[in-house]
Amino acid sequence: MTSSIIHILSTALLTLSLQACGSSTKIAFNPAVPNPYKVKAENFDKPKADELRTGAEQTELYVPYLKGKRVGMVVNPTSVIGKETTVDSLLKLGVNVVKIFGPEHGFRGNASAGMHVDDDIDKKTGIKAVSLYGSHSTPTKEDLADIDIMIFDIQDVGVRFYTYINTLQHVMEACAANKKEVLILDRPNPNGFYIDGPILDPQFKSGIGLKPIPAVHGLTVGEYAQMLNGEGWLDNKLKCKIKIIKVANYTHDTPYELPVKPSPNLNTAQSILLYPTTCLFEGTYLNHGRGTLFPFTIIGSPSLKGKYSFSFTPKSIKGMSETPIFMNQVCYGLDLRDYDANIFRKTKQINLEWIIALYKASPNKADFFNSKLSNQMLPIERLIGVADFRQQIIAGKSEAEIRASWEPGLSKYKTMREKYLLYP
Image (tube, rainbow, N blue to C red; front, side, top):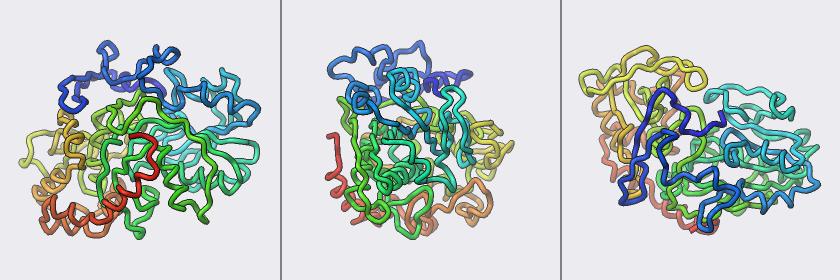
């Protein structure tokens, strides 16, 4: 699970556009095709002066700081330095890693979304691996007793309902309460070039949204950690001692293709850029590509036959989606695999037209948002974060009218966010 994203779909050659604004460069998921945006593994040891380097890659800035310390690490398959996991790399550099903490999907990434992950011993290193997903989402006093410092090194994708920033909050709360420092090895936000969506209403607080931030928050993990501290959002308004290793040569507008898929169903660069928009379909009676090799890039249902010509059939796929909605049924709908994701860079907005159009096309409108129909669905309010979105779609409100209802909260957030930025 720590292999490069270009190896994920070995049976298919996926080509998509992920270009800087105004460019038309095509990027293929093929190891033989050069990728103009990807940090080359062979350059990690001798980086060019202007080359992007993640916090983890800059070992010279933090390994000396770890000398003599017992280290815990919150990591998953995205925690890499070149082609090795950060854990393996730091062990080779003599860092005393005594415990591993894994969030949703587990440290090695072999658990499907929402699946329970047990504590275990990591087979490769022999180090105890503690699961931080489900009922044990926050490290206990006992978990932290034998560590001096906690490293947080997980790739986020910049969306409120992506659970890793919640893991960050829980880790910071536990470490603050137990007087442990957190060292954050920052990574780029592939959706960090925009901020959009309504601010989470506290009544819809859940495991996919804890704090009053918009759906697309425009922060790196390090910046969000500063916000958690600065806004007094940790339990009992505690402040966690944090040290952040910044990404070198990065701005929020820097195009960044992840070297490792951030989770089993975000398996292409296209899916990551579409995710802030298409994850909203988890709150609809539609399949959004789960049970296929193209999650979050195709959307449809059997009921849309005759409305759309594109079709696909979800199957059970171990490690991705064992029981997808409409399994083994032909679904009809949208194929967004070739959608020009560069449009998001230009509009700096999620796309609401797709959900508006699919609702209008649905012959069973009463079922469209009915989360009781499938355990694969969530109430749309938990995803979008506000109470009125469902009724706005049903009432036929335009995208502009829906967006207007997100103010002034969104503008206030953008102003508040400025205090915590580490990058231009």
